[in-house]
Image (cartoon, rainbow, N blue to C red):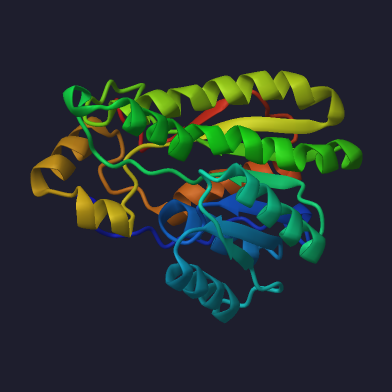
Length: 264
């Protein structure tokens, strides 16, 4: 029996095309986003990220540097619900390390809520927190990608709406909208050599998930639903993002990629 608490010890692939590539990650201070930042930096990419958590953001930079990153990641503290502030931060970081040819739209918040307690203001907040900024981040970086005639936009979705999970309707609706952005923008930007894909996590064992939502019963149910009978970790989720950010994924666009251990 595979130990469901053991993270895999894997010698992951190296992607030469990611060396010195300029990458922007939203929500990069913890969880899946932090893993993506650190893995990109470990490939030799120039990485910038946005988040609200200064302490955790600083820790991500330190870990990347300690692990031998050629370029220390840079970051800005921004509330992505403030589109003007996000645009300004993106422009500032692009001026510092170069125009972005990879965008990972990762930032999200899956706080639990019920349909009957939903208010119009909270509904708007769920969409603004989990969906709206993805489009406007694309809008901010796409002109430079068009000029470069290449780019990769990777939108992080969620398998929650596909599985009909019912404990966060505003979040699930927002995440279902990610696929609309991906497919529409893939058609728009394809002639310019820009790829747009969605990567959807299942239940990934991040610190936040384990602290806020984990229970023995819940994990047992998840593992029963998965074909692979162990936890899925942020570092291995990030490997799909690396593939799509690199030239190795050059023929992939307008697609959904599930990283969920084969969950039904």
